Length: 563
Image (cartoon, rainbow, N blue to C red; front, side):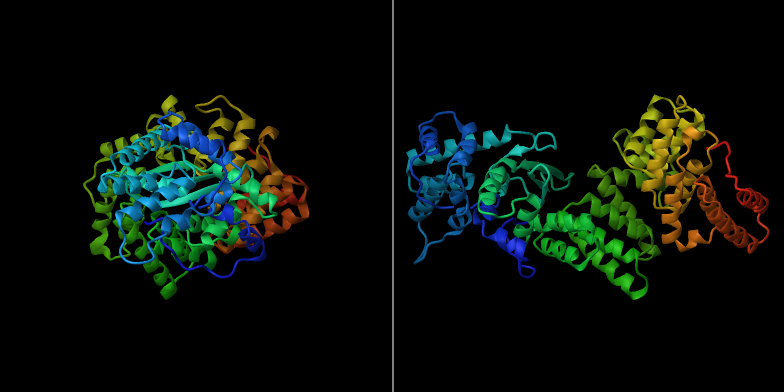
């Protein structure tokens, strides 16, 4: 993916962003832009020292940002970078002159030093070439030792373009990028997906752009323009920055736009520019859209998803390999092509995909499309669980409970990891064990927290119903949360037509209403439950439903020993 590739805008800016657009320095701030004739300053003095060999490179960016003309300098870096000769063929003298002009704007411009070094070398200007080589080495060392690219220690660079230049200088291929901003703290980072080994795992490296954004934000605020990271990224998206388009689409998704055409449009623009992260996200969006459709419309969304997955697989995405494998395994490409899904999973596993390891383990455990190998499957699952894969953690904890009827420290760590990872079934299991005092000391307060979390995050009706039943009818008052139980059932029975016809779920709904003292409502709901059950072929739970109805008519709630 090329970070500088232009793309068409997606319509006129709204008034708020037009106001923001007046703050030109902030727009160009993190894209890397400038040219100006600034007076002598501490920054100019520092540059003179650096040229003389002083080891003060760590001071370069802070001193630059503290300069009163830093915003003016930043606002022109892109135009200075793209400037080309006006008449006739280019020459090494002109290339050297243009590179040195860029360095007068910002002496930390790694790409300009590289251009100047090559031109000076061609012209046999050894002193100039040596100066730029020293600068290249110092700038490379400074960035390399400023962090490790992790969440905790991102690399420190002035602009996104400086991050791209550094990766190019190190010959590290980049396949995708995404900005991440926080409007509350003003933090702005650039996440870059790199591929150091063509057949190896992709890596995410982070670069911190917060100091530069903060400096520009102060200038923009003085000009009366909005200066939040999200506003900046919306503008950069309009200007054709694929990393910003991807980030802007994610923000729209999280703010409720969901699968709206605007969200899809931004991701499509970024995908067209070759951004792997956008391609992965767009494939996920199309798969989600397909799950909500049927017939020809579903087929069109699936094919759109496949197009994005194939592009992402070609760029080495293990995530795309897994998603494409799932389509193969489901029979989407025909029963005769199911085995291709296994090959894709093996490729993804070689790229350290835990999702692929877990799916391969399930196939091996059941002997589907591969030879049955339960021991090897469990070893895969346990290794994935130890590496933090939440579904593998839950499976491994359940397997230990079922085979050993115990949960040792490792099993507890797995279960707690899955619960902390947000899996509703893991929260439900952990909450139930704490409530029962099995494999853990009994702790009703902790049990109620985990059970409540399971009910609030689960989407499947069975989990929500189980949680609501416990919170409504628990014999011990310390386990009850009837208001939440009723809220959970109200929401589920409103959105899920199938659940609303289920006698067992109607029974829970009535019990939750009774636990809140709403006995008239409880009676009405229980009568629905009884009618739905009587329409079935003599179900065994009819007597229980009738007994509950009598209690509700008598103004009594239902309580029992649960879970």
